[in-house]
Length: 510
Image (cartoon, rainbow, N blue to C red; front, side, top):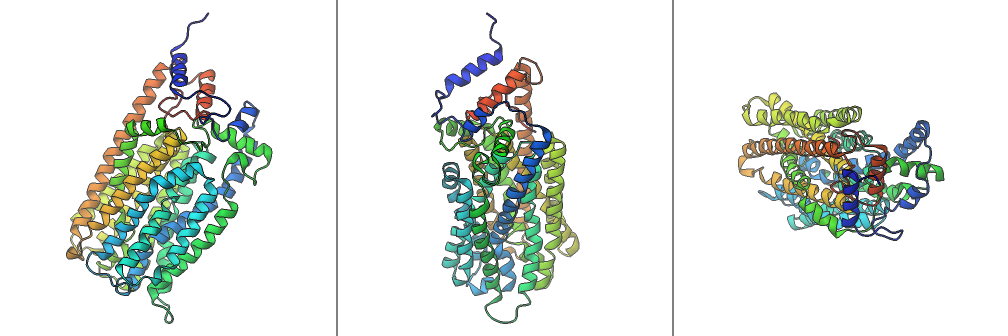
């Protein structure tokens, strides 16, 4: 009898450390029956491309408009601040800064419950209900006339919007191969830039309203109404699983599942696994992503809640604070699409792309710190350079969607990343001290520190994943690429909800 290879021993260890596999076991993927019945069927490239096009047409537009609206909605106070929002709600001193933080307290509280519900419930229906809910909350904002009311409103808005980013990360891994994810993720994430431009245009239009309600109220009424409509659209048209999607024919559902199975991550598993929750805590990637997100989001408040206030400090009139946000949005939009294309064309360039984008942000923050207040155009260009930060952060989301396996572990890792996202966004607004207006020196220094922390974590993450890949290559039977049997076993392990740590056939995309 032939002796076992080192890979065979690894597989035995995985099976011993995992619950027994049966047709009713919680380890089996929700799409496992479709996968197993049709395993090994011939799928030609043309058929796969046709299915991919149908998935793109159905999934990407819904994600695009939800993400556009959630960015506009959470940053509504930025646009409203130019039209008497603080006065209309009786805000004083640091009250406005606290509203920027309170939204992320709600976002933080919502992270782990929403992650659990995204795993347990039909994901399309859950996201539709959340979008509808925050639209209702937003449209009631004009009824708030004091700090307590507006703070409660912002907390609830953050609580419901906490579903979006983690939910979209999971959707990426459910519908797309690892190589396809960067471009599709940037296709919806680029709406941050579009929203900055579009929001500036809406703010400019609101500035010309002469009658009716106070101008700041129209911002929330317009954004809230659009979100309610989008919530209904999402409930009706966003599918829950590739294996049950009604917009695909039966054969196309099989192709959709087979495509994603090759990620070695499975599709979806609704069963919460305690062993994976412990592994999430012990995994260095979890903490690297947490610190990275915290550092990345400390500067975020400068580009969201405080943009109008920063630009007005350069001596610009009210309408100027709106249309001068448009170039920053264009920088963000173009950088995100370019980054998505680069990382699709060269799959192992994600950490490099993050490094370049973050270096540009460091240059921008350094100029904000160092340039004199008299150099208004130089400081404005420096602020626009900081909009490259969206590219770096969005790429960290593909690390979760492509490089974390085991569904419980994936949603918990995403929740940990977005916990750091919340911590950074809670800290950020507090660096804008009203006593330092209009210079905000502390805020610009905090931005620079945040970007430096993020860059350090990107480099640490890259070298960690690179070293694991090299070690596994050395241990594989072929010495470099997986054998056909190792590849088959790695895919099977993914459909049995085995994590990337335990699945020795898994390789990180760098």
